[in-house]
Image: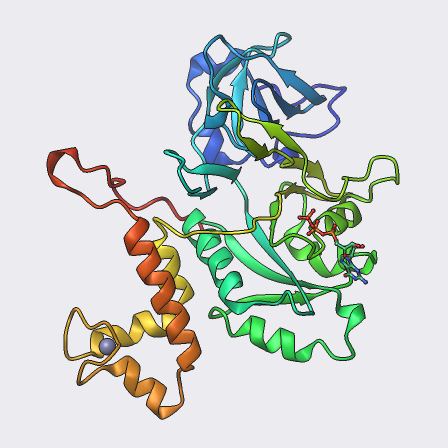
Length: 344
Ligand SMILES: Nc1nc2c(ncn2[C@@H]2O[C@H](COP(=O)(O)OP(=O)(O)OP(=O)(O)O)[C@@H](O)[C@H]2O)c(=O)[nH]1
Ligand SMILES: [Zn+2]
């Protein structure tokens, strides 16, 4: 892999390259360039190379829906003809109603900034869905509370956010202020990739513009860009990779109105660790923690060490996940084999 070109604007490690990808290369791959996908559209993709942005040429019949922003691919030098995609270290994906395959949100993300604001948009149940998604993807999650400048005291929001998952970090910012860059710097260093997820209007585009220190003309428009997908439906394709001024990379994702969970069992276990850990103490192995005698989870609610509302939210997500997750049905079962790699 040619990493020392004199005109390089960024090194491969600066783009997020790591031994994990290097180890996937064979001697024959020496002739190719490694590119990081920066945007994915229906019939075209762009990438970042050590020389700056490039347009990737796609072989006939290549379906871009199998690629995510943040993916590493190998391409022919000069022509940038795609050769193959490298294995991912993490993948954010979600099931959308009616679609056969999950929608790919972002790949090879180190940290997910779950963005929410200090106002009525703050919703623990919704934040737990994002956290389950991030956990399942194999990424670290940080809650970013925006609009701190609009409340007298953000502390109640911070306390609620911190209670959503054990050892969860919460950062409170004004997304419009450059102070946000310093507050988020621990996750935005050279070669690091963060993704912004959160509902519409919480300040993701504002934060992106602050992190990337975009000039007014180059600013990411607020509101999603829509484009017809192959089936003529409208899909949001505003996702893209942007360089953080003086640091790593940030992937913007469009606001998700509804986030259904499926295939996030281990993500839920990590999210609700306090419940997961109590369950083995229940009298019945298949305890639903609803009404069974000898239920350790209900005992914790009675003792005041577990919030009843939290247990109720766990139940809802757990049931939804079970309903939506395909299970093995004989030889034709379509359940994913083996746990997905976690890299923490
Ligand atoms: N005062 C203040 N306003 C903010 C802050 N963050 C965002 N805003 C404002 O909130 C509005 C919505 O912010 P956006 O950045 O467009 O929200 P978004 O999350 O990108 O929304 P979508 O693009 O719909 O997903 C804009 O008017 C911002 O200027 C903040 O921290 N403080
Ligand atoms: Zn129980």
